[in-house]
Length: 248
Image 1 (spheres, rainbow, N blue to C red):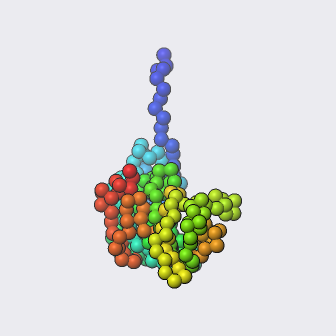
Image 2: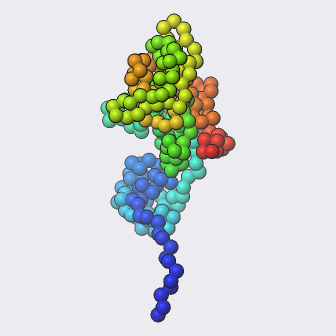
Image 3: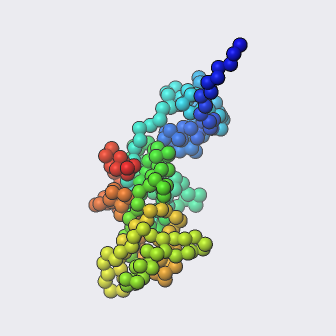
């Protein structure tokens, strides 16, 4: 018998069923694992209680409580994060997180896109589509992020230029896409700083390297999406056009 010379189509890689459910935006990976352990998940008609049970996404039929576990429609929420909240799903020390602002919202499971540290405020996005969220957070494909930063001095033109040039901090080159003075009064000033990447505590570390202390840090925009007059601690769901503008 002569072999078919055509190459066989490549099958999708296998991943744990809990991971696949999370990637489909149906639940966090921890919650999906709990569903599996509770016996609520079937793969090709058979119950599995192993969260790492290997499945091929798009080929194997996965159901949760008897209903097809299809990918959810993409939904994105913006929150005006108050100062003092952690950007995490839960904290081992019991500290308050950003999810306290979304409690009893009726929203599906959503994960934060990037993060704002505990002392920072402003625009924080959540999404139920992990792949889309990763692309938005990536320096290569994501949008610029704009911050308004209150500092403990009034930087002159030379200092603003130096901030734009960046600094080497702990072996890491930190910089900003743009820096400008917004307003000044007394001994303090507000700066607008635009980043096209998101390193850990990037603005705070950059300013400290230039002898400047941060008094407040507020993210005001991601791409063309602005925080606007959304009240602190409040959230709203983005329209389709707003979601599309973030991805462009």
